[in-house]
Length: 210
Image (cartoon, rainbow, N blue to C red; front, top):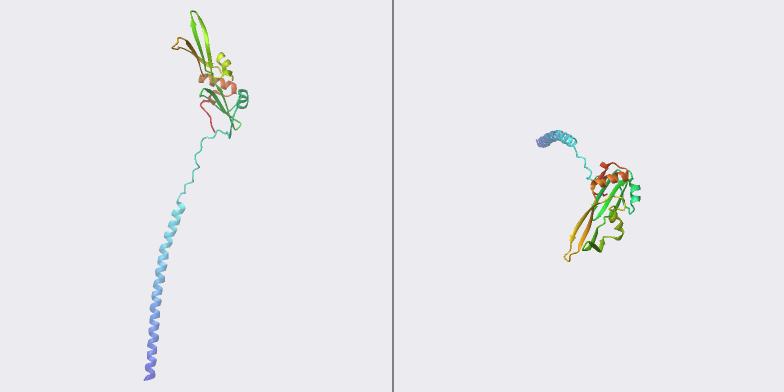
């Protein structure tokens, strides 16, 4: 009896262990099934996300806006009209302006922005009258070398000026004769077109800059 009871107890323990292992196996199977199910659910989402990501259009960065290029990389200021005319002949773009009492011209030619300017004369004559005669007291001009240009009404570069004569009287009874010179835009454009051998529509009333 003692041996059999002891053997039965061992069998019972083994059965218990086997049952426990079976329970663990079932639980492991359930866990594996759950993991597989979860993985199966995740895979389609991953595919969708990848498709969505791949379908997204990534905007191409736009280049920074730049000022319109005139094809000029360097600027040269010339003091001689003859040299400016020779270097700017046939220029693709020309501009002129009157600024600060100066006639200014700029032109783009051969990758260079050439510029030229000439001062416009200003002259004032003070005189006094005695009976039918007049005596000149002073002649004031902005620069002595502009005297010839003022007397002939033409810039040294050859551009004709428009002259306006103004008469005023001073408190002491003397007279002041002012000669004011202007530049007509139409005259300047036609003159530049002839001088530089360019079309009128290639000449702007303004200023060019790099």
